[in-house]
Length: 136
Image (cartoon, rainbow, N blue to C red; front, side, top):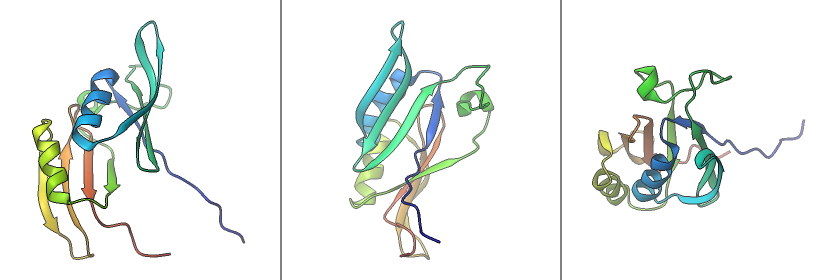
């Protein structure tokens, strides 16, 4: 059986996707690569960090996938992990300055990485660290 080259792209919902784009670029140094609008409202956006992508869009009560902002869920149902090559403590400081709620301060892990976790402006959980998983 041959292996398939695959990329995972998280998709997130925000009540205010335009504010989320601005915040994610400021806090995590994402680059806004594409934004689609209808009637001046963001309906889809693609943000990048290196070769990695995330998609985001607006929260709708009648979302066909039943995906929602944590603000509407009154909780979270996922966490996105960003594996970085830069200094985790510096990254955390930048996120904190942008208003991130730090859930877990930077720390060394028993599996060989350094990481921290935070919530963004709509309470999505993000973990950021140097751990890239075990080699294939």
